[in-house]
Length: 223
Image 1 (spheres, one colour):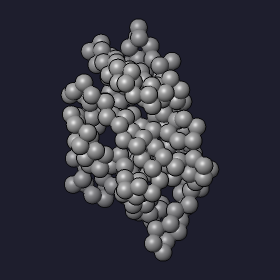
Image 2 (cartoon, helix red, strand yellow):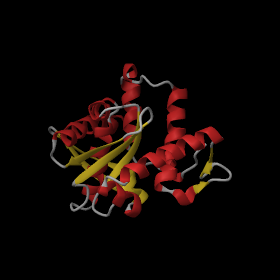
Image 3 (cartoon, rainbow, N blue to C red):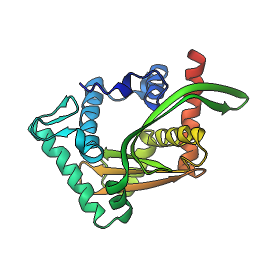
């Protein structure tokens, strides 16, 4: 069990918006609880090995207080090696792996939102897998084997919503922040790493922004 205090904070996160969407539209909640727990468990492993190596104990096979089997640990290290191999041919990924701050938290006690004729404020929080000072990015594992399938996953799993939410939260704290973002995804079924850059105002950003604004408005209505 992961006891990171970030997850017990009261501000609204992108995960809170997902939970609200699943309550309002249960047909969209296609992931069973056991599968979601496993995905979070393994995601924590990859995030730890890649972005918080000092939090990993290779003897006890733990990331923080999250315990893993030897097979799970071996799998996690394989994902790390895929990233390292890709970084030998990707200068930006190489820079990210060597220089980004891992698991960087941002909090806005009162973020302002506008949707149509409505204006409202919510306390918000987010945690970047990687942050590079003026912008950050996300690390994912996926089942895609092609760039096209990966980009379809961005829409299907609402990764566009999370990136727009993170961009706008940091931008609300400082307009010099959050004007771009990125996703790296390690394929679980192929020896591939996929990349997507997001820029404020582009199609992916606008799609994600519309998604999170509608949910943020509904969250505000119910609280």
